[in-house]
Length: 132
Figure 1: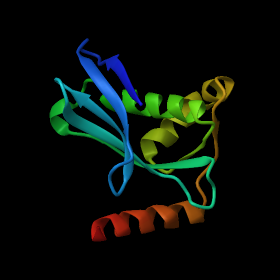
Figure 2: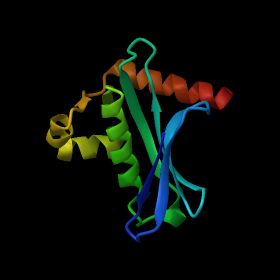
Figure 3: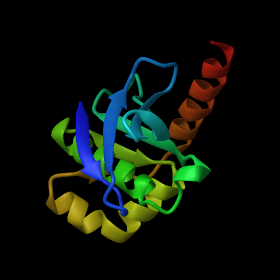
């Protein structure tokens, strides 16, 4: 999955799904492939129809271009396509869904509040990725 978009400056960007690393993410690249940011997630093994988003970051030099918002929106759109329930541990995802949750659900999206088991899974995933 790779989607072409434009940022707030009108420059082309690419958003892709990267599941080849220890921690999966939607990535945003600029300027012909320069990685600018990631929206990291984990798919709980006990719930194949859920995706827990836990960290979104855009490199400082690419700030102000709306890249984090593009990442969040594309990740949520892809979650609808894949019929996944989003679990927003990441504050950026949580804020977006608090503000636009009704619209997201109207488009076919599903989300729920994080549970302690989600937080434990994120912690374990991050720790294991550090060991890899």
